[in-house]
Length: 549
Ligand code: NAD
Image 1 (tube, protein in one colour):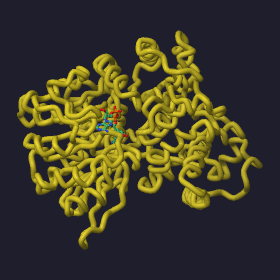
Image 2 (cartoon, rainbow, N blue to C red; image 1 turned 90 degrees about the vertical axis):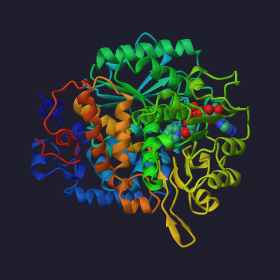
Image 3 (cartoon, helix red, strand yellow; image 1 turned 45 degrees about the horizontal axis):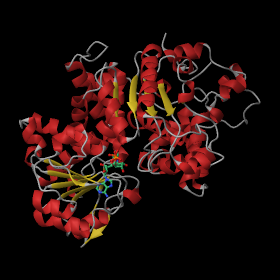
Image 4 (cartoon, rainbow, N blue to C red; image 1 turned 45 degrees about the vertical axis):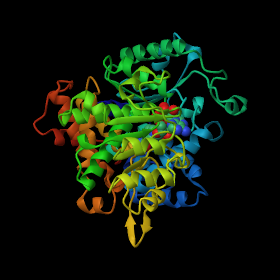
């Protein structure tokens, strides 16, 4: 029996039904449902269509004074009527995604202890070490397919927010459904609470997390190991997405688990694939070949390492040996250019430390290395100043400039700065959204390298195929699929990503490509269908009410 059928058979009645977000239809319950399900008198006489309900949501949202209040309102809607929540989100992703995820979720995480209404998801506190499996059993759904788990230590670009980071797994999982139609009942947001080193939070009387500083790495790793083992035992078909862990934890844990269980890290692999999609889109504009480019990164953290790794793999697919591919990738961090004489580099940095004289001057590095693209993943707002943009624009007819750091205040430059200082020649994308720019009579539409282009597609493909592993090849397939969805007219306006308004179509296309890789590599746990795209599409969630009772 399907999970939804089982639930239908034991459908709650009366008030309990109105309080069940998965089955509640609120004012849209029909006359016969009201009769048979014990709802008479518990609802006003008026019966709404879904359209009327959406209209009411729009009205109520329009009366909220700011985006955080809209976030709170939508979060409560998710708690009471999940179908309506997703119906609203999917009716206009451009308007609503920024309210349930970036940029609003950043503010929501900062304020998490203050705006808390009803708890969502699971909190695994290190205080409960040895009892993780028991806690996982407290979750009512037994067939969990997606866990997004954060340690709360590196939330967006906002640093260590401890248990306040729970807003991220909640928001990410909502996007799996809203962008790619992954059925929401299979998802579980988890926050691993190991304390926080954020003094402000520790002093805040309304902070809801564990009031202690973070433990040594060995203790964290032991707890994560208990978590992973418990997930394998309790939810054997589950994919674990690591999200917003501190850079070195993220890299170490991904390396430990990627070949052992079905998991990925969106900050590393998802970001990398979004960047790759943008670069492939940009190369459609500049008519260049990936293996002819030279990249200089500002930042050498988890995002930079992930992007470099995926670029290496894609260049190798174009025929370059690994060594030659890496020679085209240069990284520059807080201590300057990564080069062979540096003695402060981690192992994962070393493949990108090439022979070069030491420098802490980014412009000097541009002039010497002559990159075709600069990629900002440094968390340092305005680091791509006029000197930087002019330097890269002097070397390239169409300089590729990506300012990926979030939130907007951390963006290495604005779209306007990139276009103005490059005399309109930049092929620009950013992590945070920027409005179109009018320069010398031409309107430039900047691309937003938003992770929502990739991870929901990976999620849908993994869900549909019950994949055993998530591989980089799957991310490359998703990136290529996204890049090929940009139309020539969109490229002409400066866009290198498809518009968010058509996100569901983009994700379905990308998910089908990812599923092809999953089947081709023998990673699926279901038989290969004749028409993979149709097979994937058939398993998507649709935010529609079903006749109950
Ligand atoms: P991280 O903390 O792991 O790495 C930051 C890196 O920047 C480090 O190597 C650090 O040495 C370097 N750095 C710091 N200050 C610098 C300076 N003044 N000059 C040069 N380098 C400096 O962070 P991360 O996980 O790699 O993320 C980096 C940024 O990328 C974040 O702002 C994050 O929001 C953003 N990001 C964007 C997306 C996206 O747009 N799709 C996805 C994930 C992360």
